[in-house]
Image 1 (cartoon, rainbow, N blue to C red):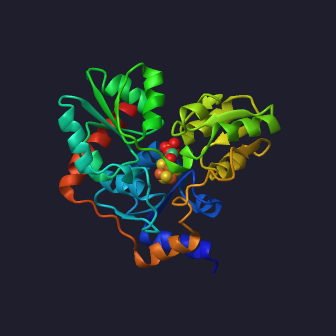
Image 2 (cartoon, rainbow, N blue to C red):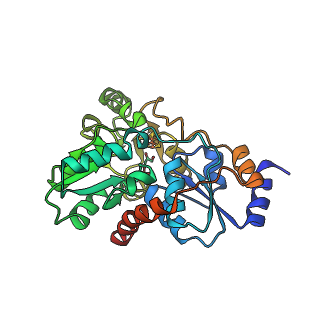
Image 3 (tube, rainbow, N blue to C red):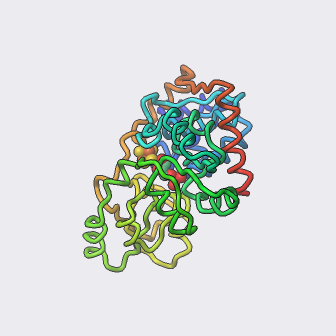
Length: 302
Ligand code: 13P
Ligand code: SF4
């Protein structure tokens, strides 16, 4: 039996579902039941009737699945798969920020720990952040937005609201430079530039479209353009190419790689299902408070 066949047999035996983020390696995307962005993955995690969720992504994503589905066993195939941006703010630091800004609405990016989500009024992903500000926090006089300062800057430009921000960022997206975009545009003048809102404003300013990873997949199909420069983690190109065989996709830079997203492999998925490891645990008191901010986001996203 191949590793793939062993995974499929065990998945059936355990009544498990495999969820994968768009940045996962090709073999992992190809074995997953669902591949998507943070919002799509949250919706799937909330709706599945499987007993076990094998989460091929990073820790905060698996934790979000556990918060939404506490009775299911959520497994992260590599326990070291974290998100440096999520670790850039601690619950104590957020509590201090809140005490310095009493009465402010608190919005957190989904790329945060459960403890941070437990301190917030509302959660958002890159796909719905603008809507969360416009609808979910429309009555808030001040808004604290943590931890991604680039996403906050993008949403501020879209909504005309200014935020109390935290200086967090995604190292993978921050490494993408405007020079990389210009270099690729010179090589491929007919290509449209798609960029993630975690990119800097200098990079976003050169983009034809700014979107979450799922938004990029949609835009590529609808735009009428057939060649793209992709300013996000390059793992998404596997899915873009698979869904659009006649089109051409150029990574903005060879360095646009999130090392954490690359830790999951077929072997680790197999071991996860064999040994039921590594189980995500969220203390119930934290989970309930974090659930409220995610539930509100999902209700507003419908
Ligand atoms: P989305 O897939 O939600 O756009 O998020 C990108 C990301 O950086 C996830 O860690
Ligand atoms: Fe975190 Fe950036 Fe990696 Fe996403 S791409 S998991 S935000 S480090």
